[in-house]
Amino acid sequence: MIAPLAAPSPSAPAKAPYPLVSVRNLCKHYALRAGWGFGHSVFKAVENVSFDIMPNETLGLVGESGSGKSTIGRAVTMLNPPTSGVVAFEGVDLAEQSGRDMRRMRQRMQMVFQDPYSALNPRMTVGDYVAEPLVIHGLCKTAAERRDLVAELFSKVGLDPRFMARFPHQFSGGQRQRICIARAIGVRPSFIVADEPIAALDVSIQAQVVNLLQDLQEEMGLAYLFISHDLRMVRYLCHRVAVIWKGRIVELAPSAALYGNPLHPYTRRLLSAVPVPDPALERARTRLPEVAALPDDPLAHELVEAEPGHYVARAALS
Ligand code: ADP
Ligand code: MG
Image (cartoon, rainbow, N blue to C red; front, side):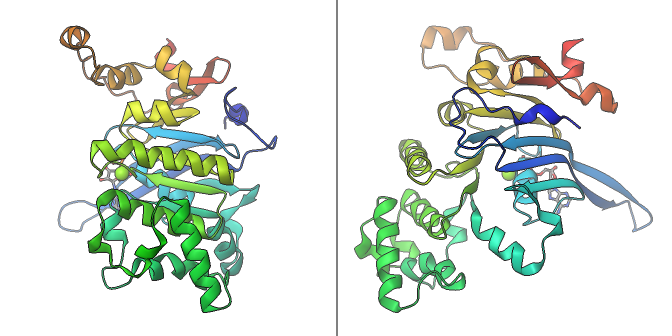
């Protein structure tokens, strides 16, 4: 149990002294059938993950494909509950919530996904799609009220409210992601898990969507868990960053410390794979070799505070 993870980064504008989201010893295991259905083994997709997210903070989650990022995102919102461990939201243990309380909590936590087209319903106007959760949560009483709210949400995400009556196929990828974001913020959440929200978008559009997320954070006081394999975007957007390797956090630090002084060999390897815009530097850049897996020793994986707020797996320090 690592208690002092609550420390926000100096740049994170913490409004309250307590975390909005607390995750402790989160594990997600999948039973795998071995051969002809005889016996089974367990695949540890996420193992003993702990972190906090402060109100108004963006925590980045980086790691290669298959490292467990989406599993963590879905466990935190209870979309796919953890095998063990605690997820607390606004100080309340989510596993102990009744159905009705959980629905209310869910309103405060939203998700935005990588592929906005598959999230949208092709037979529903985008206006109805954005209005749906408002209706479900009883946030508007009359049709006129609903229309006004949806129009306001469209403006907020940079879309012309006249587009409300259109269908998803009439929009570009970036516009579709704006529609999904409008739906997510309509219920006034305080926390959004954004799972690779820009990965499917044109590079030219990615920065616009990231800037929108940033503007909304400021305006609405949102906290984000921002899942991405784009390390440059994570550095730009996130106050703190957690590096996931084979289902575990191996390093967690304020962005400047993580990028300026990466302590774990896996973090260094990830950073060595980021292209640099200078051609001479880019030619000289070498990708660091594969990092050898650690023995399955909990002590080796334990996070220790190497510098204030900068946590790294103990094994990387020895
Ligand atoms: P990421 O988002 O970092 O790419 P995921 O969280 O999607 O990784 O997946 C982590 C690991 O868990 C992967 O190896 C994946 O194959 C495995 N996994 C995900 N869902 C299941 C499942 N339902 N059953 C078995 N294994 C799964
Ligand atoms: Mg994923």
